[in-house]
Picture 1: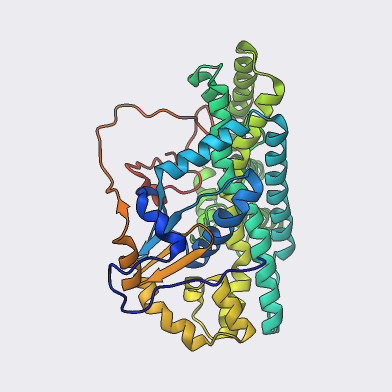
Picture 2: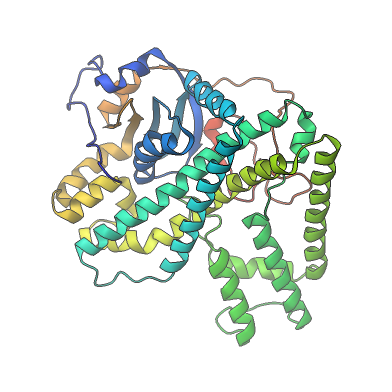
Length: 437
């Protein structure tokens, strides 16, 4: 969070054809297409583009996007990428994976970022900011952003890195075999939660409990077990802008599960995991994949999934801090993330008035664009946002008759979950943790 660049914006009431800032003019030469759509906040987006894509990518993997932009329009979030930029970055990473030391370094630094955030989030559990002054809240926000960003860059890079390692394997191993070896090196959080859930159900069944009628007044050991499970996993589906579990929902899930055989479910999940482990090692042995190459590929796959889950933890862990900041600045809690970290820090430090913040909100909520240029980020809203888009060559999504989709699976074997049909990248916000794409 050092040496923060001040956001630039075009003058109000600017003509549509007004030249872009020099830092962004190269974006006019590229062909742009929708890349991903999610329900993410302005706060997250601004910081992510400025720090993760703008700085930390280069520090971690040695290269960064030159141009990238995100559009928010009537609460719809859409990232756009230029294919030439994506290919440039992916080719660079692919070539670098010839170096074993580079792979080890990336994986170690990513893992450190994940672990530090998990420890930080655990320390923050139940933290109360009541009575904190503006300086203390500002310092807490800076710390939150710093630790969060070092985790977030690992999330983003893990996708590119796992793909590069898969591509490397496919030089000597059939594509289907690579998919069979794509089992994460460690048990993923969704699977860990599912096994823990069914173990809890099995224990309740041993105690002859048929149904939980009131979560506030069950036997003490039962209440403790349910509360412990809720505390450990309630954030798993809460991707950046999503709500955490409600206790009533967990109780309903338990009551439904009590009609099934909990022990059998646990056995089935563990047996499936063991069978997939055997398949991985048998496949690697068949095609002569070294233990090191296999472990690195599987660790990258694990980080790819872990990172997605930890974004939910970050959303949950930071909620008390954002509530305290909103209260201190007299801002509505549900609007706090419509402002960037720089704006919130300015308001806490006294260099930006709350009235000025609120004056930016109406146009920003209607339409905004955050664009990464060659050196810094630029934020536009309202007419300025449309004026920026009008100067770019943006492809419209095209629906084609797809007969077959190929790729590397994140988890081989049978799974249970809601199936989500996604016809193009702009619909990725339909997919939640635990869903089947």
